[in-house]
Image 1 (cartoon, rainbow, N blue to C red):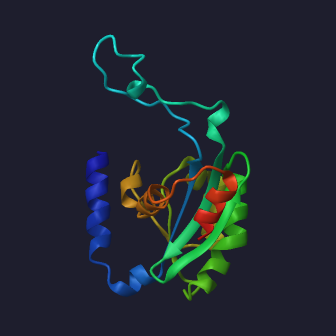
Image 2 (cartoon, rainbow, N blue to C red):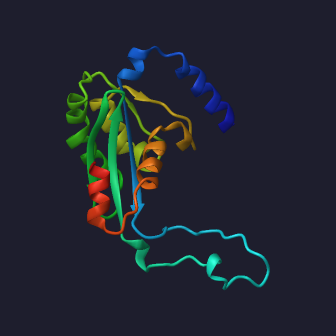
Length: 178
């Protein structure tokens, strides 16, 4: 079912003209860890090599000092960047949109009739967010579930972290701001 929804979505947007894509603001948030990962790493190894140094990952307690950010961009450039403290739920997301979305649209020279492109994260699809968007940003591009691959921001995040050797929060903030 998800595959069909992805295909239908792609067919519905692939032939949109350039003026549509110039009016889209892509938004996303991501966590960047300075050291390591919050998740589990998999290492392929031969039997009895679990303690071989090439198979060990260094760790740091409490997630490796990461930074959560919200960002938006459009065909005309990058919008506002917001550093997020602690957890981000629906209400914090609404506040970020209130404080940054229209300002970013003006900065990007996009009229207030822009199309908002966000993924289906639960904080994006909660009732309070949907109601706020209905009254403040009625043109939301409906994306299929489980589709992070359809959001170009994933490529932006990857490129940012791939090109820099980062060892502190200040350095990470400077790289992300740049």
